[in-house]
Length: 366
Image (cartoon, rainbow, N blue to C red; front, top):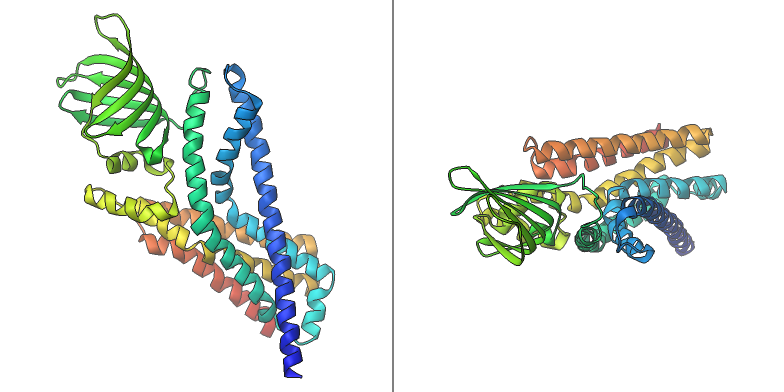
């Protein structure tokens, strides 16, 4: 008899895990499609004056931008996926029958929690590095596509430097290769005495040893005719770590590259706080997704006991939104150095899990 109950429980666990996983994957796929369509339409609008902007080129660029955007909304995708799975199971009375047969709430929640943890691990270890790589390629593609389209970027990068040749202010429309390659570059160069010397416009600038290598440079100097040079070298005192730190959160570093980025920043005498915070957030992602599933579970339990689908689902979405806002607020505190990176990354997820478990315990045991 015990063997039969265990077999039944194992079959039910696999069934519940499959339903939750299928719904979460469907929501993530829908998010990818929705983000792609919106981004594709926006890029079409921006590329109106670009002579080299074909439909295939714009679609390829949008495909490369989508993963980094979807990664930001992943917690909501898991929340909506778990909500959809639990509500469908409740409306079909499958959870009611499972409860009537002696299966506790914790038994049918365990597969869903395991699925959320697995999604979090895959998102951190696999999806994030892919998104970072594709975002890096998208930055370069976007720079080439809109170089002559008259489109200005609202995400321009600014770097100020000082070298043996004097001071320079560098503006770039985008950055790639973790910040060491700049696209759509304009350099305002000054003498050591602070007098304006020349303006340099280039397609790209790559950081090499003690200098920037500018490709296809157009040099406009005081008192001279403009010159077009295939390559121009601008001296710099910046290291790769200093450039990445100056660019801040605008450059995306993949999960497996973060330890090296932290070590490099430390050797360069810079604060590794931002990279440490990003690393801890990625490590805490499974816990955050588990909290979202537990929030969805509190909604599902209220539904089949008390009714009121729309109201309870809205409550679950609101609770998930509050947790997301708290997570972003803790991220801002951590980035400002007001919270330790471990606390800023892990505390919202842990508190969300504990509060959800408290609600479930109250619903189960009164």
